[in-house]
Image (cartoon, rainbow, N blue to C red; front, side, top):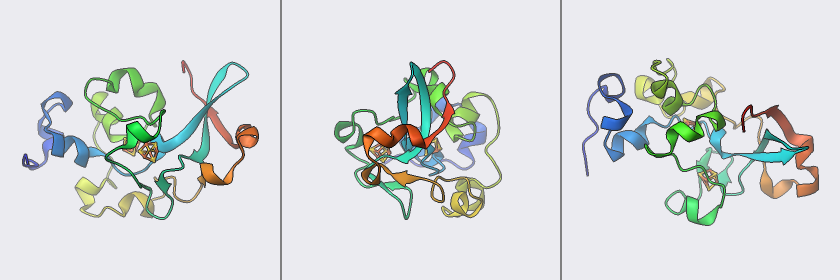
Length: 150
Ligand code: SF4
Ligand code: SF4
């Protein structure tokens, strides 16, 4: 197992990160686990979370096999990050570093507290509903915002 280097997010490019550092970068917001729907020929973000997401923790219940179990699961890699930027929230750590910006003050790498993302309401915990509780014909009632260029 590779070592997570001290302050790696400030010292190295995304390309230079090892697998542990890449994983540690995720803030745990789960915004990328919200369903995107096509409606009237446009792509929209909803407040509906993937059926595999644990709502109490915003963690995936099958993280290791996530992209095999869920067809539209967005498993970010160094190779696919740039083409998926439009689907990521402006607060996403990968997006911020890719754009040359700093991590937010509430990020767990800075606070040393994985709950920080929830404490400052930057996760989807308080406003998402599970895919398991919404009928597909009602998905459009949960539209939050259009994804431009999506
Ligand atoms: S949006 Fe970015 S930071 Fe948030 S859970 Fe997804 S990959 Fe992690
Ligand atoms: S399968 Fe993918 S989209 Fe669904 S909860 Fe897990 S990580 Fe999120």
